[in-house]
Image 1 (cartoon, rainbow, N blue to C red):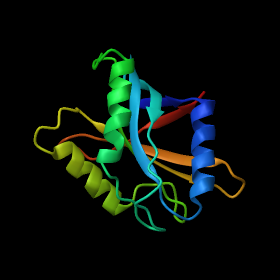
Image 2: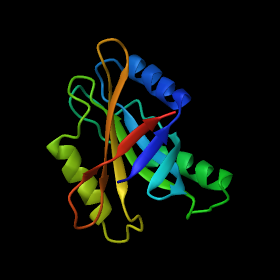
Image 3: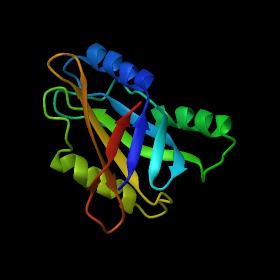
Image 4: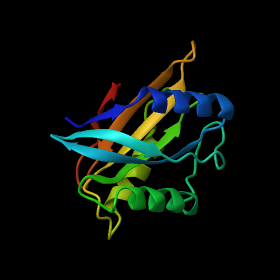
Length: 154
């Protein structure tokens, strides 16, 4: 099973961004550190505040290239240890679970010719009734059904 660790600061940043967005979907890309044994630590994530409605989000790749470039510079381009981890977006009006459209889009990303990633994770988040961040994550691999990723909050 794949697991990902999120820090309290990252959860708080998600909470702030979700509050700010209200009923609009937001999202971005995630980067992580490979700790071995299918365990990852989220190193960061970009936030795109535009391109979302109440029931959809369209990521604009150009908005995330700078984030990715800075990340790779900071980590010395050590791609074995630090790399692209996947995508995230919010579901402010629906459960924090991937929709069928989300699943199709993530499978399309991982199946793209020239895609060097062995897998990509989709994290779906929302604010619960009491302001807690609710989340689920799934890993996508070529030719395989998605598998749930364990989220560990530190």
